View 1: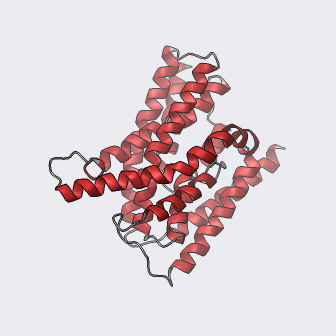
View 2: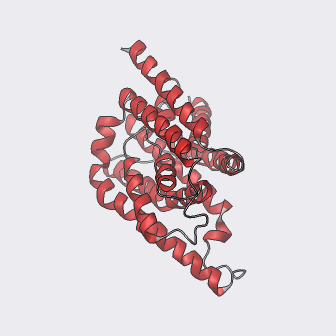
Length: 277
């Protein structure tokens, strides 16, 4: 039973690592996976597990972008250190809407929308949005092509788009990338800012989930802790590969294929929902 849980944690970690940074909704994939790969654990542990393994994904961004995100690096000039601090301030500004709007609505949205049909519909809606935005984008010249040019106002607007990701199936990276492109960011600026914005947001969400889990009277048993750590570690390794793939892919391609993928996945979820009724 314990070994089976480890195998399942590895699979779920792979799913999280791939889908967290690609704009295809990790929640949608984990909901589908949950129908076939159930950990032998309580529902409260499963709910916490699916969020906390995001810590591995966060660590992947920190490792890959450590120099860029480190304002104390001795290899940076004074100007570069100032630019790094400015980037972090922009990330903080972008987090404000999620803190103000997201925290009060988090439990309600999870209760009412963390289900097959709502997630499937949201997957399809944002899939169509990506296709339409990329079609429009071919006729547009990006307003911001570097993160240094990206303004505080733009960061705040992206933060508002991130609030939309509270609805399961949206995809946090999907909402922020889509929002950034819509207001004039290049694909690379939109993608990297989405990566960086995920660090405080996902760390906060994971920490909050752990606090809630413990506040409900739960505790971490040894086997559950091992399963959680393995899922997180796998998420970290796979996230590094997924991020490198996405950045390489975007050198010659756009996000249209991810839009079509979301639509197909949404249709599959709806079909499964009808069959399971």
